[in-house]
Image (cartoon, rainbow, N blue to C red):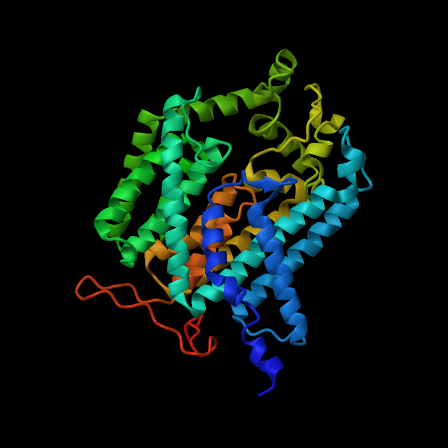
Length: 446
């Protein structure tokens, strides 16, 4: 047999001798963004090495790649996104920057780093989804590592909420907001493991899920609670019958009442909106208060102005902090000397890449969910696939790896038959000797 053809079947894969170690590290490092070297996350370094590894293997087989058509097309669509974003970045070079560090950043360093981070995320999604769909046992193994690492983070978050000045838990993240969004993914992964009867037992998993729910609540994340509400709304929309819709709607309403009663989410949201309306005056009164003059509150003031000025291609990917001091955006508010981030998710990104490309990105983020929906009507798997677009909509940065990994989980188990209540749990299919022969189809045959 031609060795190049044989090797082509194994292109999209992890290094065989390091596979288990890679899956373990990926599942664990997803729990934090704090482990970095020279500003680059450890997990991003692994993803870059994985990308180079796959590139090398592809070159050795004359670029013949054996993989799911859906994943291949998804990769090309993200390549198109990067090409269009590059046009916006090129145009941004014709405009002045307004930051003392612009001599470094103005050369496109931030834009290149954003593009690299996206390539890392897409590489993780495509590679892991291909590995998982070929052998779901590897998917469940990584899901267990992911879930229990997230549960351990709750042992840090809950004491933080009790002892910290702001009474918010952040786990292994730097803030409660991003941590809350991450804990939604941990809960969904744990629910999927419980549903598939994977783990130490339903009772233990249920207790761990309750603990994780407490950890999520300790974060007091407004974005997380909003994301959960949207997930429930989607469940109401796609529920099979009236009874299921009523139950989903009732659970959502109960959750809203509990959140409003026992957290400061409603008050905090109202404060954000009120502060943004009077941002100019407050920034002049408190020019050194970085809780006010940079970040989300400032973003609610600057992002609409940037979108109004450059709705089609934006101000340049990653250029928000470089141009926010421009007179046409700043008005009478104070000048800041830091590279600010709006922290507004895809809404803030629209100011940098424009409205059309943001809509295209949203479409790309929802494609795995649409693929999973075609394979299964099981809601827990559908929720796994919906996690990524929803957390990005509510503030999770594209450079966070955990949303891409959770999408890979969903694609990896979407083709499996869920265990029946009336019979024993079906074992996970064991692939044949050849990975291609044992591959689960990503789409049902027509």
